Amino acid sequence: MESKEHKALNPTGQYPLLETKKGSLTGLVTIGKYLCKQAKKLMGSGDALENAKISQWMNWSQTTLQPLVDQIGTGIFEKETMFLSSWNDANKELKSVIKMLSTAVSAGNGFLVGG
Image 1: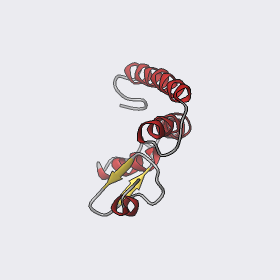
Image 2: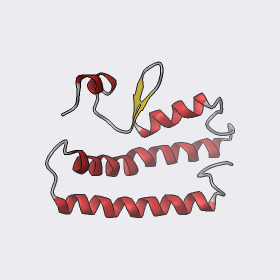
Image 3: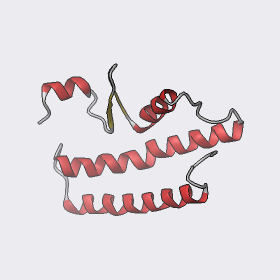
């Protein structure tokens, strides 16, 4: 059961959750964009292909990575009933996705795009 304080920070119930001095944010893409702005760096150099690749990875994180994280979080935090086999499948898939992501970062000298 979530506390009233937590529900006030996270009314949508989505994760990840980032608390800031000005308020809270949820979702990988939203948090990623916020952190880029805070670092006073634009997302990309302005090159059309580079910007498209940034969007590609952000969309991937929202459609592939986030659902797996949510599913595993459900199993851990018991927001709802989940079969162990479903949790194990999601965990196995997440490991595969993280391995692919790690390979892509390594190929880009520590960056997915640019550098």
